[in-house]
Image 1 (cartoon, one colour):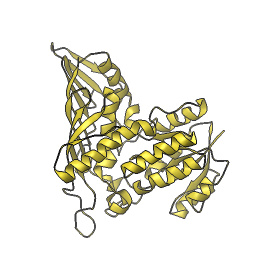
Image 2: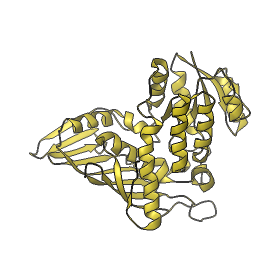
Image 3: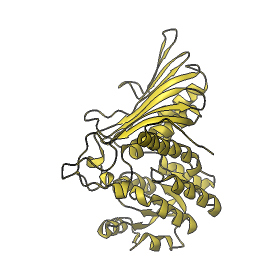
Image 4: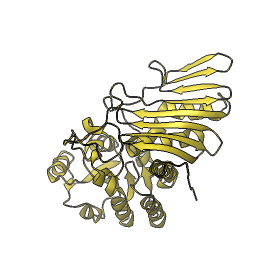
Length: 346
């Protein structure tokens, strides 16, 4: 039996982590910690577990094998590093951390501890993305020339466990970054996954255009990020992340190749639509992308548990996601300096 602790009992923990762990017969939800003690105690009672007064106390419990870190962005690195040093495997929510040195320290600590560090980049597990990667590798649309990938919705204030304009997502001290860290990391990581290439250069605008706090002032983190990425294979494309799509959510990717165009989650009827250079249309009805309003099983927790049961490192490791975080931080630098920035993957 794998004993799991949950650190941070907000919306992502309650919607994804906790119920998905509970679905696995090999897992026992053993401990809960949240800054809101009543919330942790309520969940502990529901799952016949224990509520801890601090995350340090939870990590000190030698019976706990692994933890999910579902706290606000700013504390990801601190808690993850402490958990790894305490001998726990860690599944950390995205964004991995709020500075590049922190991300690198997480990866180094995981390697030194011999414990697994996985990051919750669930877009890699969406069925149409898995199929699209296969089709691209098989040459269905030829060599990749350009791309556009987008993730936009109306903002996290309706998603948070404490909804409204006071959500921690808008608090720079807790979140550090906004739409870029919330949504942009997903699509940056997805491009790495689909293409097998890395972003080597970025020209970006990471800005606050519309979101306001309760006082009417623009929030302290970005609500839009628009990046032009150059990949290691030569293709150039755009990545857009937005909290100001006040209508239907957009979670689409379009790949433009020398032999055709592949639309992924860009058509309401088909999860993949390929239009070849000769004019043939190839349709794939695989699944529907999940939205904030229509949550489906992420696959992240199942993958993490499988790694623990089968004793193999996760594909979505901290080391793997570090490449995407480097592109995120380079994009922020590009926006701040007004210059194109090379992404250092050394």
